[in-house]
Image (tube, rainbow, N blue to C red; front, side, top):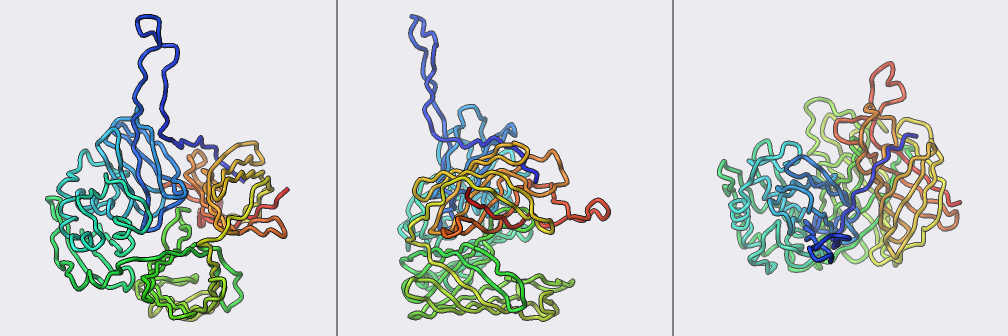
Amino acid sequence: MKMTKLVLAILFSIAITACGGDGGDGGPGPTPTTQTISGVAAVGNPLSQVPVYLKDKTGKEVNALTNDDGNFSFVTTDLTPPFYLRTQGYGLFTYTDQQSGTANLDPLATAVIAIANGGEADICTNPPTQLDLTTATSTLKDFLSLVLQKYGVQDADFITTPFDANGQGMDAVIDSIHTELDPANKTIEIKNSFTGETIGQGTFNADGQVNETDPIDQDEVNNLPQSMTSKKYFSYTEDNYGSPEFGPIMIDMLDDGNGKLSVAPTATDGDTGDMYIISYGQGTKTGDSISFTFHGLIMCNYTDPPGTDDSKAIAEFTGTIDANGNISGTFTNTLPPGDTCKENGGNTYEGAFRADDVTNATPADIAGTYDVYVTPDEWAEEGPATLTITQSGSSIDISAIDPQGVEFSGHGTVYGNYTIFRIPVILGHDTNQNATAEYATFFGEFDSETNTIKGFYGDGIPPGDELKAPDYDTTGRTTAAEGFWMAVKK
């Protein structure tokens, strides 16, 4: 098992005091001023333990992990603005030319960047020399003016105005609408999170503005919920064709109070290991009955012949809520015409699902030292490495030593019996032996009876690196950046 060492650069806003300086009279020298860039990473719900990368004008890059509330902070005293920021996964970007201040990472901040950059939100791969954020912010505020008014957001800057991911104000705006960007066609589309209906469309022009091709009207805004409540679940699926149960997958669900639901499951990408929202779905709840539907979601291993339109896939979930708030039921996944699931050779993929409500669950005590084993995609189990977890409430710190004696560390969160944590490590057999790891993501469930944690992970391979398949030396074939893991307490 290969584990690449990476020294974490988790930077907090800490005052630095000069020691031993000479102020001219033998006294201490002046205290330097600490500069910081901070913000919140959110897609409505706060993005907990998500890696954030900041690149300065010279190309120097540092990284930090968000806390349980999605907040992050960088010390920028020795860095040179402008700064280009991104999340690992989720596709969020932001920018600031200030040495100190706020730079939020959320869909609206990302939209401002895209408007100012000719439709392209990714400013980290090829950083632009400058961006006119003033014009871009003004045109997006005009486009969303009725939505902003509904939730009492006035005189706010999408990037520089601090906010909390608490369902109020700016966060309510992000909760109630989905902002979809198409860099190739230079378009922006605004959808009602609870119905999936398009309420506004526009195109980006060369002057860093939005031309509204379908303005948002008052009736469409009236259909947005005035307030929302959120719940968090961890879910497993099991098909009807003998495949093993898969999970846990994290699900965030918003309820508008009138039976309409907005549902967003999160997992890791099988090609990069980054976390991402699998799909945005809509649903309804009546009493103990619940159902929700996703468009463009394919759950099986599929053939994907040329010409098939994956957006025509539909996944429908129907279930019952028990006395503890947990959900169990069935799913039906219908693929696009001409496509086939490899598991059953058909166009329809079916099975059962269950979801545990962890919204107000007491975090399990998972602290301890474990033997940890990993099974990269297509490879046999490897390990053990030593994994040590220390815990304070729902927050955990991770430290580990691999079989070669390499140390690495990370952070995570505990939700009831479930956990998500991040470690900067490459667990597979990668093609670039000198690659510097990004953060691998671990989803797991703790079993208090056996003192084990089991789940799946997305590997920490950086862009441009790939993981070798077992026959790579003869075929050159690569495999997915994911696998299963198990930790057994010592």
